[in-house]
Length: 85
Image 1 (cartoon, rainbow, N blue to C red):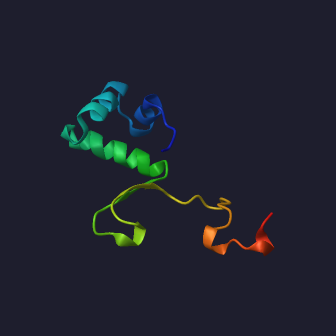
Image 2: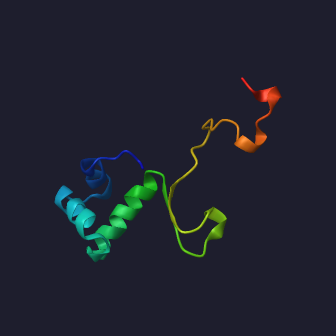
Image 3: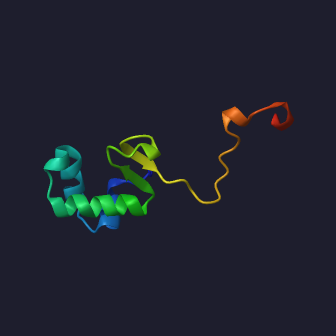
């Protein structure tokens, strides 16, 4: 999602690469403090963690934050012959 390598995620989270690899393999079975460090690093890189029950964001999951000033183009429902370039 972010394009970060394991090495970049390790540097951003302050963890060694072998801990990142262990978390990739073992997931939620990892050390809670390491999971929190990775979550914070990913949030700083623009990842949103959406809890269940939050339907404002489209339901639970992981998404990227909208980038300020990004040109996302015209939404399909707003396309018409006047803006067809």
